[in-house]
Length: 198
Figure 1 (tube, rainbow, N blue to C red):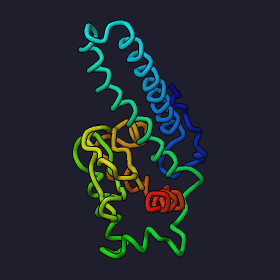
Figure 2 (cartoon, rainbow, N blue to C red):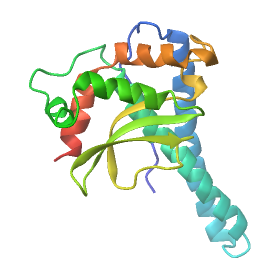
Figure 3 (spheres, rainbow, N blue to C red):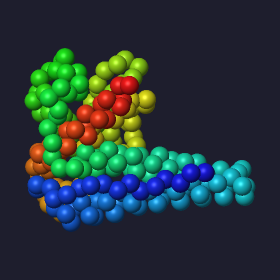
């Protein structure tokens, strides 16, 4: 069984998001990596010991695994998008061309920000649906409820309070959302799009 490994990110000084917030947030990501591995290890032992007798524990751990695993992958998209400094989309952006088949880029961004301000904890996501060949956006409750099956993530905005609590009050979610976009490395988002549409 391969273990999940913690990725390293090149996140420098950000505008409006403190080093403290990033540091604490990365610790949380590290915990998801550790817990995803622990859950799989524990499942292996329970299956070997007594699968029928451990059925309840096994079922609950499988539910827990979805939470931990998505905690790993979701955060990898998020932190990578803040790596390398804020950068605009390339002039020949395929993502921009795709988005603007439907709406101007600035309209899309405002709509995405509005979705991100949804009440509750979760993730605002733009993904590529390979089955229909189109971009889709969605709110993901917590980080594992409502995932878009088969869709490849392009852009992910963490809307759990831990992602901004050192810098903004709970009532200042919109400031955090604006700050995220100010720091976004669109070149990384473009890479995600190109990879998803291969």
